[in-house]
Image (cartoon, rainbow, N blue to C red; front, side, top):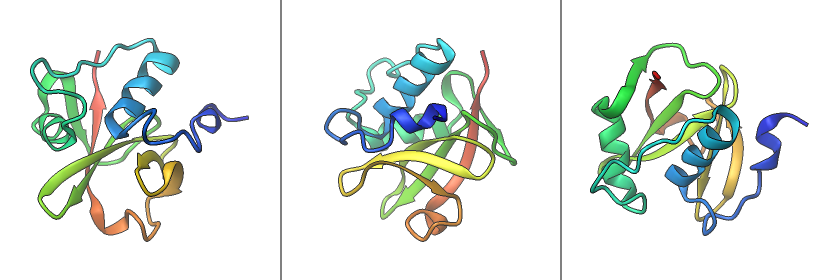
Length: 121
């Protein structure tokens, strides 16, 4: 089984989008991602915006690779994050779907992708 298989189906209540990214980084890379100080991990809009601003080592990349962060838009701007499982697929979770792995051109996220960020240690 590929590494990302263990996360598929994980209920949103157990790992909202930022918590899923943090969990993958901790378990797969041994990296403890920050909760961004005063930004509560449950305040997903603020978390996504902090990543978008490149805070705390997140660097923009044009071509995504495994473990890069994916920023996604909502009605109010950047509000959702996921993690790349390879150069073409993203692992993310939402209330309606739990954790899923979809291609970047999947209808559920295609028009929502705002950019990719790489965490630099």
